[in-house]
Image (cartoon, rainbow, N blue to C red):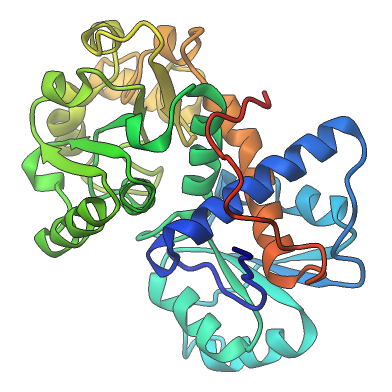
Length: 348
């Protein structure tokens, strides 16, 4: 069955069918192999992409290279898109950008901002990262899992530790449910996702042969996991550091957590940036104020052979490239057969 995503926006993974997500992952894998082998075919010649950045983030790293590899031009714009009324409405901004560019990638805070851009731009809009959703990172993560797990998706178990309400936890949960995976969140109850979200993801997981669990016990969450995943607990400008650290400290990924998986092949994942030592300003501040050498993960785990964090980071470029090609690329070459075998697909 041929899958076409031409003209589609990517705002959350909830908008995509399991077959469409597999299609994007297959395309990303193919593009990655082609780039590595030096025979990548540019499919975006003559295309112009706007990269609208409101918030400093590593989430947009790779977008420029992805566009250039495929022959497109990308322009980074610092636009206060979500501050409607101060600099002009989001609708007006969308109308202007949509008349100049073939697609728009947005990295900011408000999910409503990227949704309104998509509603009025009349070109594909991509969610590079918001406070609610991180679909491109999740696709990069599933691509990474595809590379390191010699299993079918239905046999993969993922344990996410820490802030269960984070945008990456939400996007991973939705994608895992669509792909039929076993996804667990271990978090303090105050950081659990909304009950409506839990119900929705649980339904999607059951529909696709997967599992979704939210619990408080780390040991139960990681037992048998193929991947242990965590993310930053807080941002540089976030308030309430002391209370968040107190609540989330029991969910830090340490050596005993990885051992508790009872899986010697378990990999560690993190979407970055990570506070795993004192080398950053935030890390130094935390060490001085709270007497901690790390937060969500220890340096020994972050730098261990089990860690695939930099593979994830590199795969963001391949994930966004697949999205570019699938949505605005040459329709004769941007589609691939979604029925081809996806797992295992070792292309490290």
